Length: 314
Image (cartoon, rainbow, N blue to C red; front, side):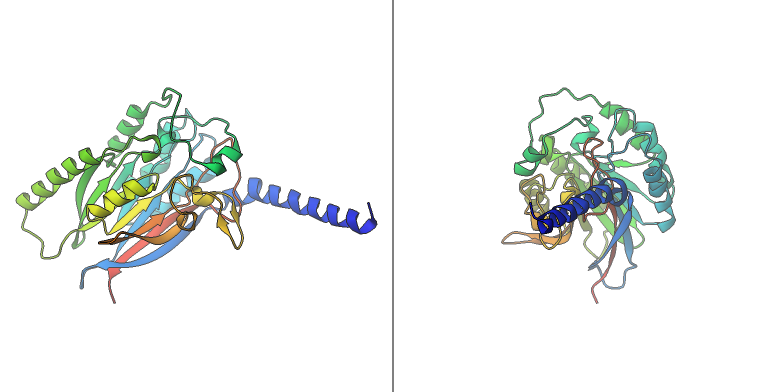
């Protein structure tokens, strides 16, 4: 090997070590807020701010993440939407509820589950992860999802798993419709639509009809194309999802290498539009705040919460 080759090899080795240290020790702890503004409200109505939290993959010892989530109550959002994979460890439930408790004191909170709210993480082949999403579980659920759901509901959070709800926030009526996680095929569109029919009929009969149509928000953990299409066909104006981790490792200039579902990788993080021949809706896919404890890495993809301001069209 020539001296030039040795210098090149040494430089590449140094760069690789630097990337590894950055992605495992630094970037995955750089929590940030990604902000968007959408013109979805009726003329003359007050703006609304939605805080979306996804994929915390929380472990009990992650005090920095817990404290950062608790600090988000200072934003005083009008609505908090939790898009699943909140649990990252079998013993994380108490820590999770502690992290979310301040948010429940300042605004309504709604939630759907992700697969990691049923199954604890385990070591996976990263190459298989990049090639195709695994949607078949051979394990029995080992997280007590019933206790997790009960704990969230006791905090006042609204369960949108295959369900719907209505909320009046300032002068805007919201209709929220949610699906349980399509990644493990727990989504049930029929149940969601039955719930939506019940809450909308109850809302219209129990109060004076609003002059403006309600704003519909779809909530789902994994943004597979089929459930996105179902939420779109049910009139969602905005769809909120997580699951992808934004690719978790992104190549500068290229972007995500995988979405871990059939969503195009170009839409694996941030705001885009989901549409068919008849309708279109804004789609926000959060890159999330965490990662599996067996894959403690993020590169060019900082952990994030999304703060989405809804306002009238200008």
